[in-house]
Length: 98
Picture 1 (cartoon, rainbow, N blue to C red):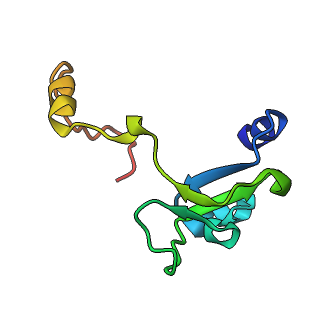
Picture 2: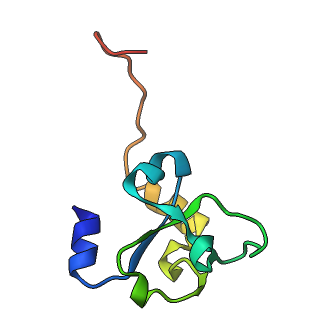
């Protein structure tokens, strides 16, 4: 559904990081094939975890992908945020698979 929506919205592609064995079945392939590289990775080395699903090849732009700034998390702020929630205790319940 999301790939269909992205196509209808006019996006030329969807980029993803993940397990190539999983995402290949959905039509994802290495982004480097289209000269799109993950920031900080060597262009000479294959980065199989960085993949693309091309929706409109005529609109593709070659270059280097950078994660959005919002992906950069301050670990101390995260720790303080997590303190707002009760500690979770792992339980084993009847019928639960181990």
